[in-house]
Length: 125
Figure 1 (spheres, one colour):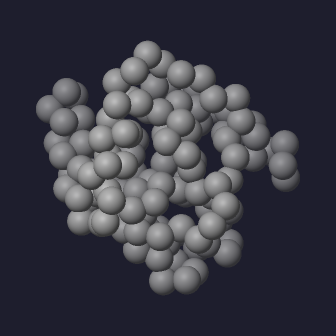
Figure 2: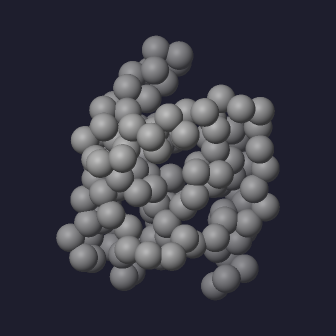
Protein backbone atom coordinates (compact mmCIF):
# COMPACT_ATOMS: atom_id res chain seq x y z
CA UNK A 1 0.00 0.00 0.00
CA UNK A 2 2.83 2.40 0.85
CA UNK A 3 4.52 1.76 -2.50
CA UNK A 4 1.24 2.43 -4.36
CA UNK A 5 0.70 5.64 -2.39
CA UNK A 6 4.23 6.84 -3.14
CA UNK A 7 3.76 6.03 -6.83
CA UNK A 8 0.44 7.90 -6.83
CA UNK A 9 2.03 10.97 -5.23
CA UNK A 10 4.87 10.84 -7.76
CA UNK A 11 2.30 10.88 -10.60
CA UNK A 12 0.46 13.81 -9.01
CA UNK A 13 3.72 15.68 -8.41
CA UNK A 14 4.81 15.15 -12.02
CA UNK A 15 1.50 16.55 -13.27
CA UNK A 16 1.73 19.52 -10.91
CA UNK A 17 5.18 20.39 -12.21
CA UNK A 18 3.80 20.75 -15.72
CA UNK A 19 1.86 23.85 -14.68
CA UNK A 20 3.21 27.30 -13.78
CA UNK A 21 3.56 27.92 -10.06
CA UNK A 22 2.74 24.30 -9.39
CA UNK A 23 5.93 23.52 -7.51
CA UNK A 24 5.03 26.10 -4.85
CA UNK A 25 1.43 24.80 -4.60
CA UNK A 26 2.68 21.21 -4.42
CA UNK A 27 5.10 22.07 -1.61
CA UNK A 28 2.30 23.81 0.29
CA UNK A 29 0.00 20.82 -0.22
CA UNK A 30 2.63 18.35 0.98
CA UNK A 31 3.38 20.54 4.01
CA UNK A 32 -0.31 20.66 4.98
CA UNK A 33 -0.81 16.93 4.49
CA UNK A 34 2.14 16.14 6.73
CA UNK A 35 0.85 18.35 9.54
CA UNK A 36 -1.39 17.00 12.26
CA UNK A 37 -4.89 16.10 11.04
CA UNK A 38 -7.14 19.07 10.57
CA UNK A 39 -10.90 19.20 10.53
CA UNK A 40 -13.00 21.04 8.02
CA UNK A 41 -16.66 21.46 8.93
CA UNK A 42 -18.12 22.63 5.61
CA UNK A 43 -16.70 22.47 2.12
CA UNK A 44 -17.24 25.72 0.23
CA UNK A 45 -16.91 26.40 -3.47
CA UNK A 46 -13.95 28.66 -4.22
CA UNK A 47 -14.84 31.41 -6.73
CA UNK A 48 -13.47 31.51 -10.26
CA UNK A 49 -13.02 29.31 -13.31
CA UNK A 50 -11.24 26.02 -12.74
CA UNK A 51 -8.01 25.85 -14.76
CA UNK A 52 -5.34 23.16 -15.17
CA UNK A 53 -3.34 23.04 -11.94
CA UNK A 54 -6.38 23.92 -9.78
CA UNK A 55 -8.04 21.42 -7.45
CA UNK A 56 -11.74 20.66 -7.77
CA UNK A 57 -14.22 18.12 -6.41
CA UNK A 58 -15.83 15.86 -8.99
CA UNK A 59 -19.31 14.35 -8.86
CA UNK A 60 -17.95 11.38 -6.85
CA UNK A 61 -16.61 13.82 -4.21
CA UNK A 62 -12.97 13.07 -5.10
CA UNK A 63 -10.54 15.99 -4.83
CA UNK A 64 -9.05 16.15 -8.34
CA UNK A 65 -6.05 17.94 -9.80
CA UNK A 66 -7.38 19.56 -12.99
CA UNK A 67 -5.42 18.64 -16.12
CA UNK A 68 -7.89 19.99 -18.70
CA UNK A 69 -11.01 22.11 -19.00
CA UNK A 70 -12.58 22.74 -22.39
CA UNK A 71 -15.46 24.85 -21.11
CA UNK A 72 -17.93 22.12 -20.16
CA UNK A 73 -15.81 18.98 -19.83
CA UNK A 74 -13.27 18.98 -17.04
CA UNK A 75 -10.86 16.25 -16.10
CA UNK A 76 -7.86 15.37 -14.01
CA UNK A 77 -6.20 13.03 -11.51
CA UNK A 78 -7.76 12.02 -8.19
CA UNK A 79 -5.79 13.16 -5.15
CA UNK A 80 -7.29 10.25 -3.19
CA UNK A 81 -6.27 7.25 -5.27
CA UNK A 82 -4.53 8.74 -8.36
CA UNK A 83 -7.25 7.35 -10.66
CA UNK A 84 -7.44 9.03 -14.03
CA UNK A 85 -8.91 10.34 -16.11
CA UNK A 86 -11.60 11.73 -13.80
CA UNK A 87 -14.00 13.56 -16.10
CA UNK A 88 -17.12 15.60 -15.34
CA UNK A 89 -19.39 18.16 -16.92
CA UNK A 90 -18.93 21.58 -15.31
CA UNK A 91 -22.56 22.46 -16.04
CA UNK A 92 -24.21 19.18 -15.04
CA UNK A 93 -22.13 17.51 -12.32
CA UNK A 94 -21.98 20.13 -9.59
CA UNK A 95 -18.20 20.43 -9.78
CA UNK A 96 -16.76 22.79 -7.16
CA UNK A 97 -13.31 24.28 -6.70
CA UNK A 98 -11.58 23.16 -3.48
CA UNK A 99 -9.14 24.71 -1.07
CA UNK A 100 -6.00 22.92 0.10
CA UNK A 101 -7.64 22.53 3.52
CA UNK A 102 -10.48 20.54 1.92
CA UNK A 103 -7.97 18.21 0.27
CA UNK A 104 -6.13 17.72 3.56
CA UNK A 105 -9.43 16.83 5.27
CA UNK A 106 -10.21 14.31 2.52
CA UNK A 107 -6.73 12.76 2.64
CA UNK A 108 -6.72 12.58 6.44
CA UNK A 109 -9.95 10.56 6.71
CA UNK A 110 -11.47 9.74 3.32
CA UNK A 111 -14.49 7.73 4.61
CA UNK A 112 -15.50 10.53 7.02
CA UNK A 113 -14.98 13.22 4.36
CA UNK A 114 -17.05 11.26 1.83
CA UNK A 115 -19.90 10.73 4.32
CA UNK A 116 -19.87 14.43 5.29
CA UNK A 117 -19.88 15.61 1.67
CA UNK A 118 -22.74 13.27 0.76
CA UNK A 119 -24.74 14.61 3.73
CA UNK A 120 -23.99 18.22 2.71
CA UNK A 121 -25.02 17.46 -0.87
CA UNK A 122 -28.29 15.86 0.29
CA UNK A 123 -29.06 18.91 2.46
CA UNK A 124 -28.52 21.26 -0.51
CA UNK A 125 -30.79 19.20 -2.79
